[in-house]
Length: 115
Length: 111
Image (cartoon, rainbow over all chains, first blue to last red; front, side):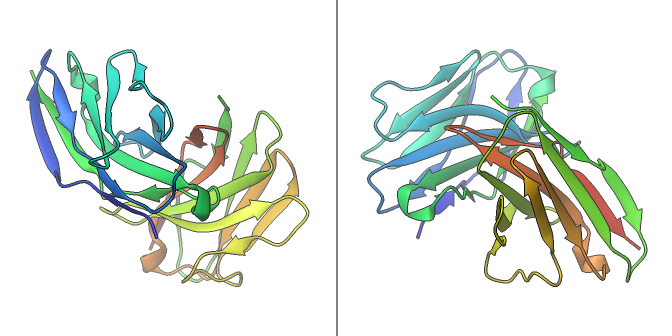
């Protein structure tokens, strides 16, 4: 079984500062993928970043980077230079070789960016 | 990446009726996925839809309540039948390559 844990129900950050959203995972799979999504109040799920378990370098996409620490089974999302539009719910998810293509999601972190 | 068009974006339905949600992808995909997100909660997979075969449902979800069609490799529908207020949720379709992409979601309110 796979499990994603996001321990921060809510986070606050000042505009233009960086923020780290935590995600830990549990799996017995050797090959797996980790995802982060942003969900604004509209409800859509916006793909942000992906990290494969065999990727040696941390994934980056613009202001988003994934701090992947395999031994600690953590995949934290770092958002640099926060903007007001970053205020949303953020979900960490994973997909493993034994789960087929289905994603397992964490409970999410509500990020609020203050001006 | 994939462009996924999901309709309707929101609806308000009477209890006892049904709602059919459509999902159109701009490229052919083998599997499409349907998720439910109840208020204040995370996403839960309802079923996996393969073209040309019956959908595979997750524990707790049944075909009579959530019939799915997958007539071709770019299109799928999810019907939520015999609606009750407990069905009020966001429903999302998804396709996966290396990354996984979602439609815009359908916000259903049952009154």
